[in-house]
Amino acid sequence: MCNRARYRGEPETLFGAANQLFSERPRDNRFNPQELRPKGRSYVIREQDGERRAWDVMTWDVLGGQASWPMTNVRQLHLPQWRKLAEKPENRCLIPLTEFAEFTPDKHDLGDGKPPLKGEMWFSVTDQPVFAVAGFWQPTKDGGGFAMVTCDANELVAPIHPKAMITILRPEDCDTWLRGSYQEIRELQRPYDAGMMTVRGPVFPTRQPASG
Image (cartoon, rainbow, N blue to C red):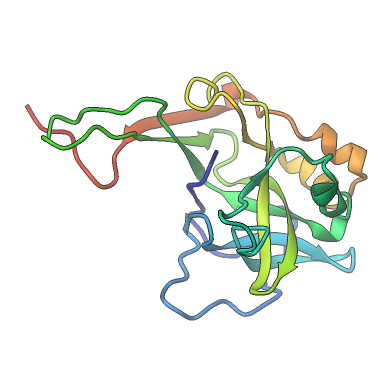
């Protein structure tokens, strides 16, 4: 479920966020916020003290390495360990993206003499070049860790990943996600309009189909 995404940009005024960071931007060359992968660091937008809204840098694993696999996506917000985070506005965040990927259900023979492999299908939102994904976060031993909230898949995503898709917010719903009640944010946990999305692929970043 969506463990590959991109944000083609740097902090700026988006979704009501100030063009500033709560923490310093990492200076090491392993920090690449334009390519989101599990356990990688990314930009998120959150609020502090219920008023100041700005960017932060967090790791895409809300458990901070405390499990055998990174916890990147959460759907069951009613479960106690997630509700205690989701119901608190100070633990909610927005994850700005420009596109996200799901792997194809079947493997493809590229005709290059190597084993078949799954391709990446990249989804974007036509009415929002940069869109916000609902998320929540918590402090971990290594700094802030976040997860994206998922929901039912829409008609475009379902043929590729029928179980779920990330919860994409409309701009007018971002304030509600960050400040609303638990019941209000649960109502936002719904699939985005498939007619406002597009998909490209499959693409194979590490290999190319044989020509001819």
